[in-house]
Length: 124
Image (cartoon, rainbow, N blue to C red; front, side, top):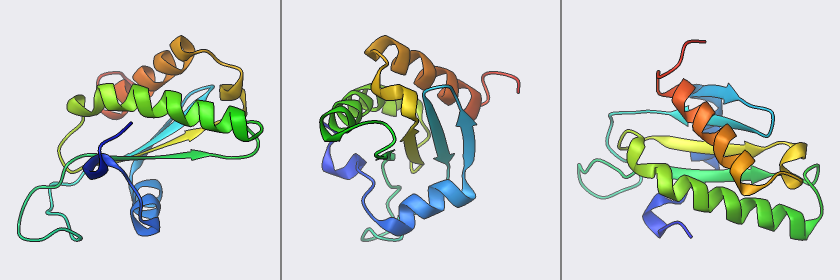
């Protein structure tokens, strides 16, 4: 489970990450990353916000049980990788239809590859 300060909840934040951030697609998922050095517009004071992550898993992935399993797996994987991301960044992970049948290792491999590309560790 992600801690409350690391959860992306507001529609505006999801839209900001998807529309203004960078995107890396993999066979099982698409990762949107918006990095910002600005302060948190929703928080008090002038503190640097923590990295926040949100997930989009549509009905194309599968039924409710499958979608919830995919969300749990993605939350677990992203939580372990939050420290690699710049402070204040917004991450949206969108699961593609094949992710319902994929194992945890396959999701982890695609997530790592997408984050590596977005953080500038791999050439396009």
